[in-house]
Length: 158
Length: 279
Ligand SMILES: Cc1cc2nc3c(=O)[nH]c(=O)nc-3n(C[C@H](O)[C@H](O)[C@H](O)COP(=O)(O)OP(=O)(O)OC[C@H]3O[C@@H](n4cnc5c(N)ncnc54)[C@H](O)[C@@H]3O)c2cc1C
Ligand code: FES
Image (cartoon, rainbow over all chains, first blue to last red; front, top):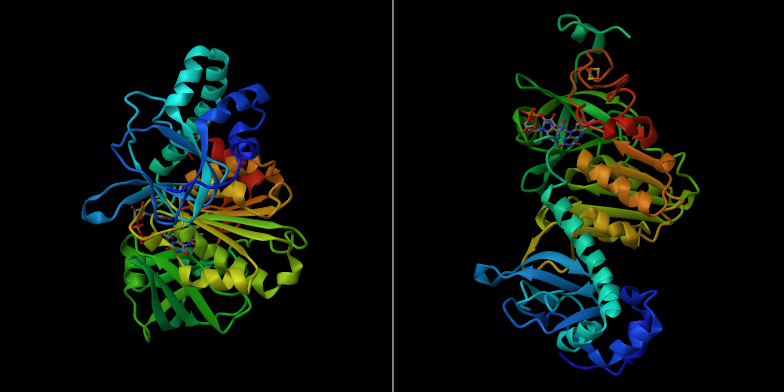
């Protein structure tokens, strides 16, 4: 993982996750963010590691994967530019449940979960704003996972 | 409408015409494309009844170019008695053909408009003639986006044609799979996740959807979220068929016969049946 020069303020402002987010909150989150980039094929995080961050993806795609025996992970979802990656930082015990690997050269912002947790403990309005956004992301992912489970390309009424 | 009895059905619908198989190509583990002697003109989305002597007859869409009438392509997934018998046939053998039957994709209504094609798995076969038609008449259409999903990368149909559809055909081809093992670096997720990425203007495009009904239902909902009017949506439906000519009643969907009024329907004409729990 390398750090890039892009200003975190600029990146946060333009990311759909923070659309209509009050300026005062965005500013208060600035100190929790740092620009990051990953080379194609690089691991963003690994199952079982401490989940300290979440990622706002601005460029490139990340595959969410389940490690499998034989070294060939199973990809179960692709996170694209404009999306967020990771919510384990929010939910104890703050451990990643999946692997994440860059499918392209990826750029974005890593938001430090410990820094965020510190802020939301004392500012419940900020906590509500953030939770609302994460709930929307989680609901979308849950719906897509449900559709995936329906095996929608299946054989008729089989 | 006269409902035929089993005894007089053949005299009404006619006997299959034997067509020689010119070649057979394997597309995926269980899907094969048969190239037969041509049968003349057909519309994109129409189907034939294919008959294997002593086994039975099934509806199979035509998957080749409507501009190429000297050959007839059928892409078949082996799922049971008749389809497995069809996919076991070899070049030089014959298969019985009756047709073409049914309605076509709205190629005329889509003229001058953007087109969004959404399909999954074997559902790309009935849409390939529409794609070929668009490529052969490219100036007639606006932006065209093909959104295609499959369970796994190796179940993707016609993947070797996607680059030429993109480059020569100026068609945006977006693909996704439900799950991928190993080297796949394409997208993973259901086909509806591709809808927001289509460059065709969905709110004004003509949409053509082909897949199992559950896929169609979620796709219609996904298009509606992007302000697509349901009047612009066309879907292809499947029902068990016997005669293919609106005589036996096997394919009936309320007052409609899928073999004659479909398989391609304007969504608003069949929306009611999608909302019913048991049809
Ligand atoms: C208008 C129309 C166009 C079609 N176009 C194509 C095509 O281009 N290529 C193609 O491979 N198939 C196509 N089909 C589906 C094909 O007709 C069926 O797969 C076939 O009738 C199954 O017959 P069978 O004797 O092989 O299997 P059966 O013994 O009848 O069934 C075996 C298994 O297949 C399942 N099955 C039955 N019918 C279908 C179906 N319609 N779709 C999926 N699974 C089914 C059954 O639930 C069962 O589990 C089309 C169907 C229609 C109505
Ligand atoms: S298949 Fe006989 S009525 Fe449609």
